[in-house]
Length: 375
Image 1 (cartoon, rainbow, N blue to C red):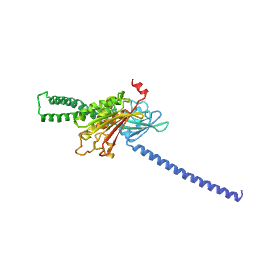
Image 2: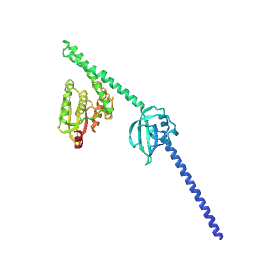
Image 3: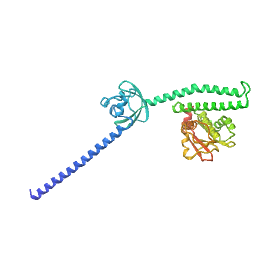
Image 4: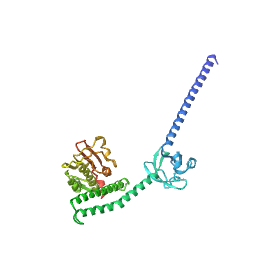
């Protein structure tokens, strides 16, 4: 071997060693980055305010976070490799479903509790299962249901009886009364009507929120529902010195007629409350595009633009000038919104301060397949 060959060989070895050294540095950096990312991912996943299970395609638990330990009373090593039926006896398999599913969880002590789970697919072999203990939610729901039952049974019946008694007194059923007496009875009747209205609204709101209400679809017309609504508000319009007019086509659509009438009555009732004496409230309805649109227009004080979305929230009432403020409980428009949305429709308001308001809602026409199914 020549000196030149020896020098070349030595140089190659040095270059190779340097190359290996650089590769080892790159590998070390990659390992460090990967470890950091894994730790960061684990930290994020395990610190979320929900229980987390990692379940494989054999329905066995591979990993869990601290909240799962707290919910069920197990240590991690007691659950890893166990079937998910240990925690959820009613479930044989975790099916991917981004929507929450309510199930019964079982603690190590044998105690059961209501839980809500979200199952998301991580890859072909693993699913992430997020768990929420909803015991407190169930307790609050039960309290609400008990309250509504109390309102229904302990208030509605006696209020209706009181209202009937006041009507008999006003009509002279218990002897003649003075003009001052008539005015006092009218005020009492108004208060009774207000409380009865609140009871009905509370019951409707509870029925809708609990999911117990589903529309009973039938064929009806714009003219039919508007005429029924106008008949229902005749008395209140007369008392408020407000004229109610209609501009309605007779287009046919499918809906829960009673509930659509309820929405119109509510919107028109609000319009009458805030309409100046001697003014006109207009109810219009007709086919527009793929549905029917109803509008109730008043000449009242109007609604500020930044508050128009909020009026459809529960118990939300706007501050009105003292001379126009009317009594209410803030449930009516929220119920209207829920009923319209049950029809896959939408509701909105068009208003300008000082120029009145127009409340609108649309209800889509339903196709023949749906009509056939309803029949």
